[in-house]
Length: 557
Picture 1 (cartoon, rainbow, N blue to C red):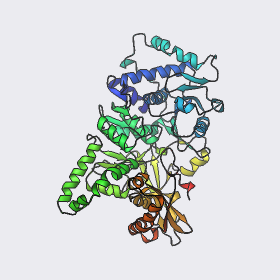
Picture 2 (cartoon, rainbow, N blue to C red; picture 1 turned 90 degrees about the vertical axis):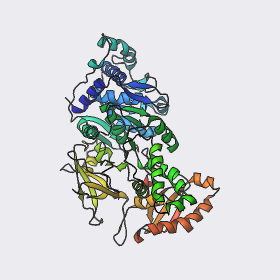
Picture 3 (cartoon, helix red, strand yellow; picture 1 turned 60 degrees about the vertical axis):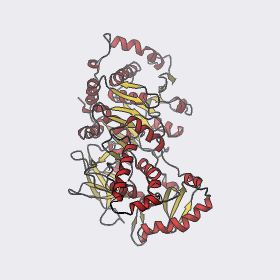
Picture 4 (cartoon, helix red, strand yellow; picture 1 turned 135 degrees about the vertical axis):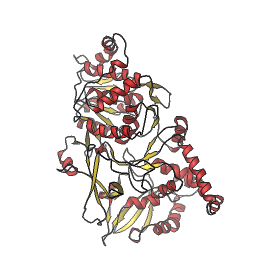
């Protein structure tokens, strides 16, 4: 039987009475048995409505228990799930729905209000994730009417399980492990989005590694706050925990530092999966102000006293994250070097992994005790392999990271040209990330930046703007930054930290003067001579970002 499907069939049986999912806001909890019953009902709905294996089902909404149930029901039925980030604008969302050839759409009603059903001609019906009712359908009186089928689910369920539903009734249809399981779109921008086709085998590579590494275990606690429609959150905040009997609490709110710290204290997760921005914001808001006090700076300058202070800082930071976690796994982007150096100094249990949607997502990871500072973990042994390919203009020590193995996607949906650009004939996926391989066996990944963002100077030097931005973002009054090349000079665009400005009653002119006289000289001391910034230019608005919170760099080049 398909190893991926069998894993969840067994987990739902073995953990039937244990809590599976909790909504953080309401406190509503669903056991593994409840989840199995929900999945069975959705399977009955699909069958009644003529949904076939291989049909595409679009899922557009915020992280909720029903979102998870719909996802799990679809993949265990043998249909293909198309998760769409709820932050995509309606035009982009409709583009993805249409491009994916989805025949059914599950959506939050607040999102569907801004969509046009008539502009999604392949969709047979739209189902509310909020109330499980049909919001629209093409043929309400037809033989496969979704409205009629929805009303008959309970009757059909009782007929299918006349003696009641229990663990022994959980049985999912088998499907080829090389079939497509998920189509995950990398961007919402109409015309630019690419649908990554991930097979059951791709996802099994991720899940099996997570299970074998004991990232989660029966009875462990997880706080899910990353978008589940994104590969990183999907795999390690949902699929791996549910494979082993963990209890997942779904935050369902914007994960600001204040909200997260409160949730960590309540849930006390056993493992924390996050992006660098979370750690960096907590460091900047919680740690930097504490260490910047005059008395604290004096104490840290005294030998032996500094160690005692760092022990207390570590204790406070660990408790802030709930106090019960094995490690914090950072992924999605490189971790700020200053933040990483500090975490290393206080012996905070963190590690950095590397992945991309095209690998569902995991490429490399190392447990925190063996983690090499500034790396992005070891390439997954037995699952993935990596090599460095020369890139014109790059120095001899680095190149483009290429990977191959079980986790690598089948290709981009209905886009063979884009597939050929990144997947070569030998099966190597060209990631577009620049870096090098090191460690004892040459399989630890070190990332410098994106190939497309690398700036090649007139004298042949490679500049990775992300590295300069990481230093600048730690400086006072800097909210976020972007380094661009203009007239052969480097310019730093800065959106100021408005909270800091308000706290000190500073206006834009005050901050620009501080940037020119204090921040710019200090920054240029920290970078190589060929990386020096000519000027800092303040911008009036936050940089436009993707739903994954990456700056749309091409808009500012």
